[in-house]
Image (cartoon, rainbow, N blue to C red; front, side, top):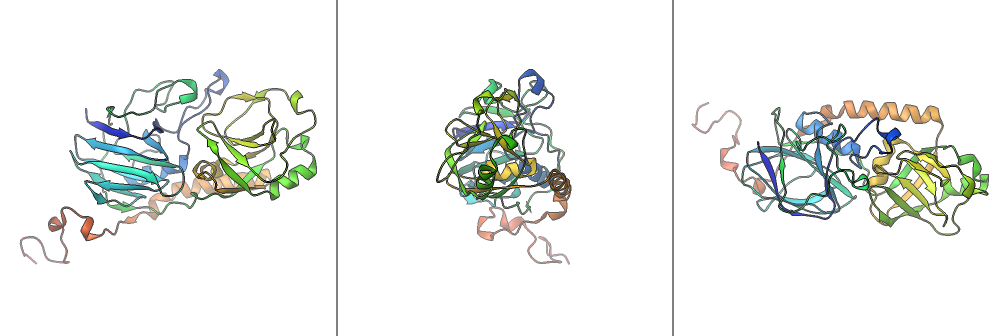
Length: 335
């Protein structure tokens, strides 16, 4: 069995996949990657399933080594990354040679970066998934000294680049009305839709707090709202009037009133908004939301068609002399 050795790990590295479906009724939220689009991008680069487990890195990465030549891909929030000291391109696939040192530093934009390996991280499944669910106590953060098993790689090319959708600096997020939206007075709903929120420093895999100038938001009789099922994307308004967007590891029920629900296709933009980034919310109809989701799924299916060969800086190619540099000329000089 091949292994990925972790020599250094940032405080927010976990093994993640698409999460667990069908567990909400048992009090366990889906969990899984904060930026599910990043999983699809990495899968496209490596030509493998998006359900394979990856390393999710919150804010900063770590130092890694493999005991076999391994294909990798880097997606999500761009991070500073080197291979034995040579810079690597983010949003691309690379060959990680046996014994080489992969250093992944802090993000340069966004919040969550992802390290994919050919064959995936092959830790045991728990309740149908390999993803760590910190809020539920399933798994634990990756730490220095860990040796993570790797699955069997289907094989394929490396040196490929995929432009990543721009979602790393906040922006406009589409929402649909929730069950309690009508409880908020119309003037508050209008103000919510016109407010430029700042992503608070208080954010984790359970939820993202939003700050704004002026008064908070509230409903009359808000304390009498019955606790009921909630899902990632719901925007709860807490007692101090601040909205919270619930994320991958949200609780499964809650009694705070919800002013709206973020479209699943726009949740990666919320997840990747760094502290201080501006987020705005625009209400759309259910018909518009379903069409947006349809287009999003079509875009994911089309990711492989966007992949291009990676143009590399010759100074960063350690094995430059092994490349055929002139068309029609081989290492032996034959034409």
